[in-house]
Length: 231
Image (cartoon, rainbow, N blue to C red; front, side):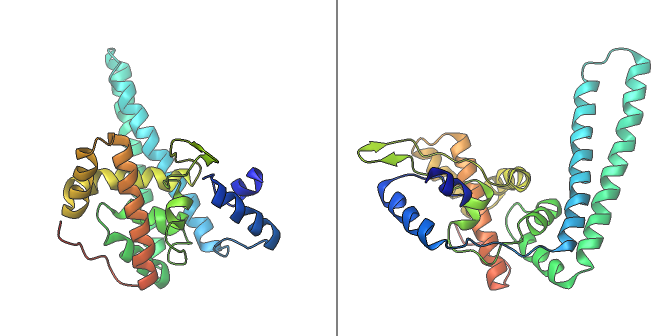
């Protein structure tokens, strides 16, 4: 039964959920799944190339911090300059290709309206989370891997955890959450309330990520840009 739960991306465990799982296993109810889109396959490959270039830039910068020999420093600087240009070129090309499709361009603009969502984050959720806009409350957070799951059975009450989900868009949402909790009045106040009751920084960031991905699902479903609410 736990294997069936993992297949359905359901990681929480308590008696009520176990009962529901038994019913679901019998009925074989399908979860939300976007139809395969060949356009997204190509865009995802280009986005991966951009992400790899980003990682290489970070690695080169770290390497340069430990170099002392002039010739090695010069060589690393040359490699870094090349990779920075490649990263910029890949981003521009990816955005142009995505905006060539009106429906994807619209989803991109809706995502861009969210706090902390720069162009790369918006492209990331459009390309790697095509299910957005067709999910019910909580499903987007679960798909991303930022939903807190129960670990209960009978009288036992375990710690709530997050697990699984889509790693690549989750990395992007982490960056968006950091920016959003600093600059968006509503999310800044939300984060402060969590801090005031003793929540650790990592828990606060995950909570903001959860808010953002659920908001992304809402704006795409409603086809209306996000409107920031007063704190």
